[in-house]
Image (cartoon, rainbow, N blue to C red; front, side, top):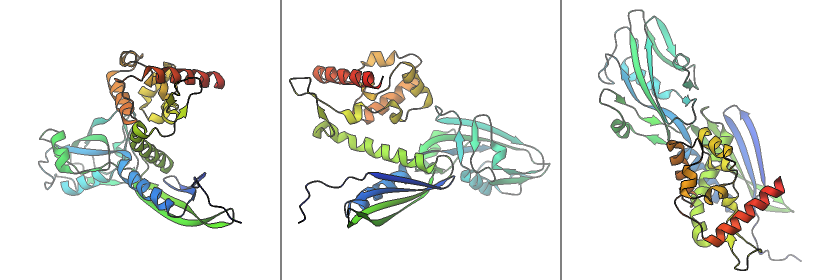
Length: 337
């Protein structure tokens, strides 16, 4: 005789199939009937709208006053040249850098492609992309401003970010080109009514599909963490305290790598002996500010990340919670050696 269930099935399996360098399938299962779509749709939206990438936001071309102008000796007019520039996919090599300005000069007959714009500071992902064809009488000098961002920013908004001599560009930051998902039936304990989500993710090469999914899931977790303040989700009660103090192990015991800080910020925290988010939460604002090699920019980045997960560095924990958390972290470190 069958029995009524009193809890929902929790998905346990994730399978990854790399189709090529920039394309992968990620399967997640099993889900209760109707629950797969509940997760699949918002994750697709986050993949398309919150993945971080790089794009040119403005260009200054010598002897070109506006995008409908032309340059002597260049086959393409300014509008087509700018369109080609916007199609390039950039990577800034310094992970701590949010913006960079690059100058270029071409003064001999050649067909310019994306690879010709590679420098010590930036890399062109789609290096075979054609940009312009010039003859030996052309002197093509231009300056690009490249920024880090998410989603899409129209030229009307980038106009205010640069000086008047620059032509503002529509900035397509997102490195995720396409995300589709398929929901299929999957058998669990002779029950064929469970579901599997199969995501197919394609990126432009600035980021791998796996990293894109990781960042989307992390973003979803951060957005949902606000409810922890009221509903005390995923908490355990300390048996060591007569007051039944609760600590949020899901957040506090995250490795600091899950904050997705820049390499410089992460390395500063690591060198300071910090491994868990809870260790940062236990520190006072002054102690955080005095972490060696944590500069102003890194401090601002860390402050923003801690605020996102609901524990700003300028706020202190209740004394009992802090004491329980400190003991829990010390015990965890001791157990793991």
